[in-house]
View 1 (cartoon, rainbow, N blue to C red):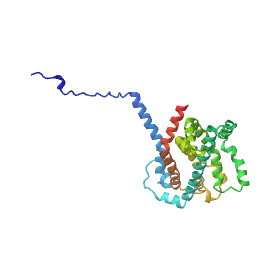
View 2: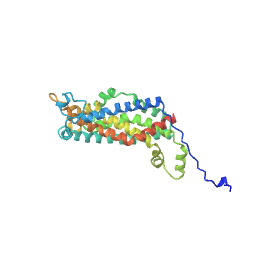
View 3: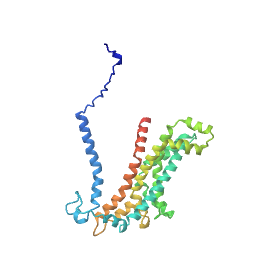
View 4: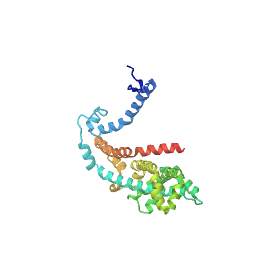
Length: 293
């Protein structure tokens, strides 16, 4: 009795290629792990530092685990050190600055890159020259202008300079993304009855979300960590931000370093949170910029 070979059940074994582990790859992984530890360790050290008192810090335990976790440092920093008030001021000033920078930069970048008018290139050049002006060079003129306008010791004394110095970078980044958008999209929107503002808001602006996130992060970092303008234009404790508040917590005769560490930790948490929320958008904008370049 013969068996038909076609009727036999044939099993196929899929052999996956083996991944070869090279010595160079292992060394690269070890190097990246070491770099990651070096980058994260300062944040971990600050967290431990904020839970210690002066006796432990100056007693040789500045680098290790705290012997006793002093969570009261955070409550004392928020109440006695006025960190909560400084935090709210920084949040307000930074939020308003980011919103104004995004609105003005996106509208200016759209008008310069997508509309045809005679002085568009000259206007773009003039705006980008603002990136070359150092903060220290504008400190005295800004102080005189704000003094004559009676804006010293107010939120606007910080918001106006922050927005002015944030617009050139915002126009540069968002405008470069506007240039890569096909004009056929705008033409189709116009045929469908969209005006300039509707085309800008509903068609063009959603396509540059990664650029907007990048500008938002850069503006946040520059406003949140800024000290020179804040310490020069603001003397009233009611309007002081976190950077000035942290500096004022250093006493003349005695300084509670654990409480200052708690305040610095509170200052650092929003920066880490903003980056974790928007890091994908920043990576996408960097990749898109590299492809366009």
